[in-house]
Length: 135
Image (cartoon, rainbow, N blue to C red; front, side, top):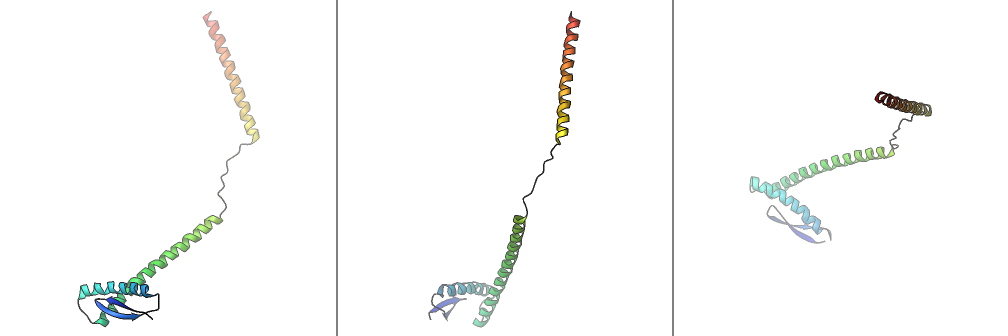
């Protein structure tokens, strides 16, 4: 079992770990050291056990906050996935365009034809009247 020397709050500690876990141990010790240095900068020198306890509590508080954020994010993801699944299950939105009945269409065509015939008749009358007045 390999032994790794880690430094926390300016103090060296020999810690045993499983082979291949050295990197994780150094990372964890680095996080604890960061909290210990904050304590030492704010409070100054303190007994080793108190420094480790306080640094551990600060790190646990930070970890708890991160876990809360992770839980919130996971809940939001689950809600969005459920909404997405619901939207995917819905039938495609259908747009209906009103269709004019054939009888109405035929009637409108007949009215248009009559209006055009009246307009042509009126044009012819006006043309005759204009020719009669000029003569």
